[in-house]
Length: 278
Image: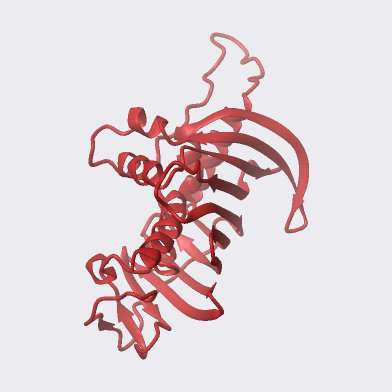
């Protein structure tokens, strides 16, 4: 159904932002011969430095909230888990609420292969391939496929504009510094080396749904590591879409924590197309 595909597209787009890696931001070099002078980094460089440091550690715990507003339906996703970006491994639980219904799902990504438990009318663990989604509802599933939830920061480094420091705050009981800016989807064209690049596909999908820019806030802790990112996409109203707004909030903590993910025992291949909103 068209309504289901639009819901799926909005959530998938927001989660694609979370999973999409980007170009690495540069850092200032040495001052020259003799004693190095203190380097004053711009807010944009500080955000890029946090990205670089996080990717160097590669493992973390995370929580994720995604809210999608439509004309007649609100879709809410709450998720939590652990990720190892160096091995494309992830373990996560999620709660998906839409139209009075609630789904509870467990997801694992092992070496880039996705497994899920809790799908309606499908008992036990199943292995889900991209073709099994059949253009239907991706709600919650793209969360599992987002095997790099930390990739949001690299994307912001590649596509952000007008980054400013916005004062201090507290996240999970720790002091952080806020940085605000705007993600310009059109910059994906210049950042993408080819039409097949994920950034270019992201730009095309965003524009088709009326999303052209997205304000964001990045929270960096006193160790220079990302603690939270918030991103809001609001439709311009020019696209043929029921989606009006998508907001995502991701928290990161315990950077460097050991992450071990195993293939679920007894997992079976998905043997039918998946379309949860009909």
